[in-house]
Image (cartoon, rainbow, N blue to C red; front, side, top):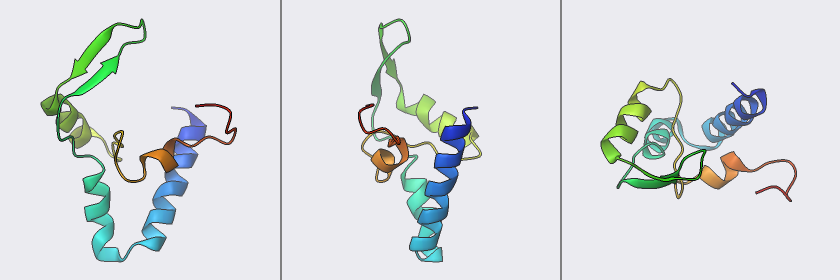
Length: 87
């Protein structure tokens, strides 16, 4: 596990918990893990792939943390890096 990603995710979760009312924290975090459709992806070798909604939902359910998906609220903040020249 990458320490930088772990720390960044922990900080994002702490900020979200501090800013949101207690009742909505769980609902907000669950909303980040819901896939509404299949997701087009690219493998490490550059080949096109499709991640099926059912597989994404299964992955999200097996994680102890949250699965952030592109387009979810909080996704851009979670993937932000210290060096803004890196995308």
